Length: 313
Picture 1 (cartoon, rainbow, N blue to C red):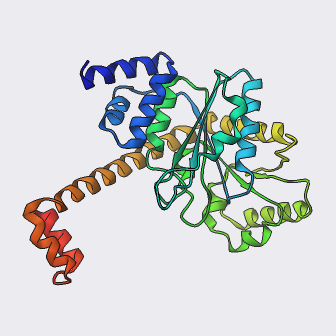
Picture 2 (tube, rainbow, N blue to C red; picture 1 turned 180 degrees about the vertical axis):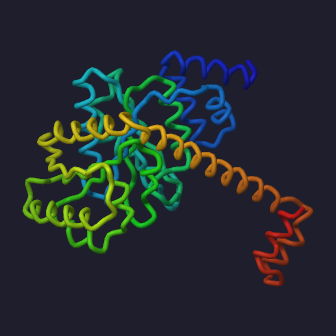
Picture 3 (cartoon, rainbow, N blue to C red; picture 1 turned 135 degrees about the vertical axis):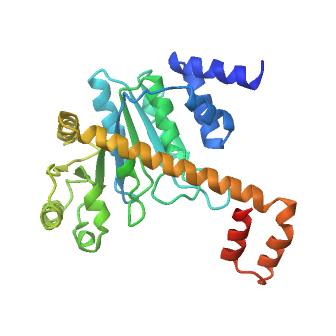
């Protein structure tokens, strides 16, 4: 069987909800195998899943919260796939895959799929393969997709451009950070979830968040602040209702399609950038530019000038 024929078989299997085919396509995507993108290109328009982003500082309780949300989705007799973005090892480039370790109780549930992937050093808390991952999972037919990021910060707010609803997870005592916090965190949050809300300082955190939101730009959607205790499941029903309410808000007007449109355009830009980088790296390694590369390495030509000359060719 040729590679093309094998790829067609895998795509057909994915569209028929075959888990092995799904895993194969996701592995191709993450490895940068051309068959991954070829498979995605054959899926057509499959934007039927609703995407929830879970982000927050490391240790905020994102994984515990995600695990509880899986249970909530399943109680509603709906299916869910989780993409957990794990930090990469600076040595091997691999991921710890800690989220799959924590979510092993769902291993044998046919309505749940959990996949960890490494950031590969990417900023924004998201790996570059996430958009393709989501397309594959949508084509498989999951009702809900949850993307859990590695963290949040000044440059780690890309989840807002990927998810339909973004849940920002924080802990009691985070109030001081709100003042110095990156405005982007407040802007991307559609819902705030205060985890470990049984600890002291929760009331102060709610007050600080409410004040910060009041001082920010006015938005048609009023961002709710939900208190949760991930270990006991307290507040999870309220959090899920807030997510459902936001979905209703988006789909009631034009905002949902506008967000999807912005996402597609952002994915186009990212794809063009990635392709351009690959082609540039290939050209730099070609013999015809060896002298120019060597001159740059010796400091005889500045990198910007060398880049212009390489691309001008």
